[in-house]
Image (cartoon, rainbow, N blue to C red; front, side, top):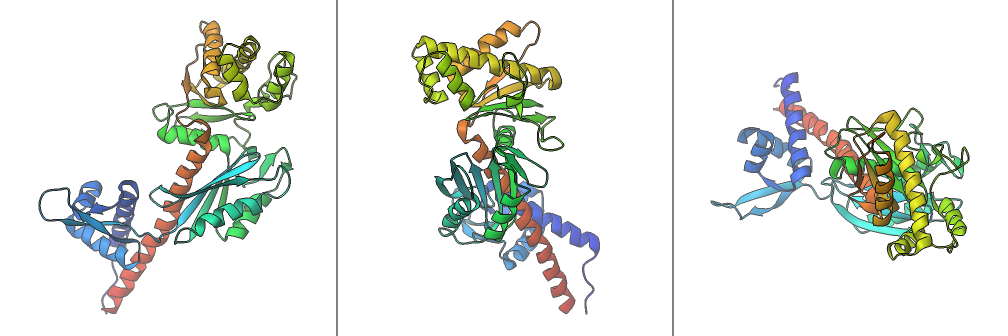
Length: 385
């Protein structure tokens, strides 16, 4: 009976297998020559690892390369049945679901309303299950972005109070797969960090205005969630004339501003800003006040964290509000210079971040299962020879 592989050989083959899987996830189907170039492995090593990965249904043939000169070479890609992750953005009145494969590609999307109060697990689960009916493969993990404070254990604190992790636990039980809950603005900041305006910044603060104002803080290339998940709750930073504990900007605040300036309080922030763009004087006055409040929030953050830049997202990226912020920032530039940029992703930033995080989590989950199982099979096979 042959002796099993030595430990270092097993470790090396495991690392080689993970390198090949990561290359296929990042680049899509590749030939053996392309995998050699991507990983730095020899042809023999690539061939051996691919043989093992094919045996565990981790990879499969994916067509032929007819673009390069010489004989046509077969491509190999990740197996189409490896499974999926669900990325979910929960808004106050609706949820958006994207089903993602290990390459990060969105395979199916779904969108539907949510009740303003009560159970959100059922409607979110139904949206995910409807997506799964359209593909072939299991669900491995779900990343959910929600408004509100999210603690390290996945508990949510929002306007309905703390849930003690009930939402995460109930959704995981319904789906039969792990669920990770994250603050939606933090996901938007991660999207900017990975592929947006923050990709080339060492530190930045994302100021995202939607129905409320939230912040995503990145320090030295790492998202800062805070000890209890409160980092980024910038809507409650004190400033005159706002009472302590009251939000400085958001739907409720804009309704009050509309009443004060003689405009329709039922119109959205976007509608007021669009009116300002057309020259409405009352709407322009509202925009100026919103710009002042947003800039003071940024100044408060700057005095504590001194980020390289501020990224304006959501409604804050509206050109009228961007201009209003720039004008106020110019007034303070001599005492406190601040740099403002506009978000790459707009209102879709939280979902983009959820997609990125879910793809990363899926790869970590699936690849860690595949490579050790391949190695165990290899050891047993050699022991039998």
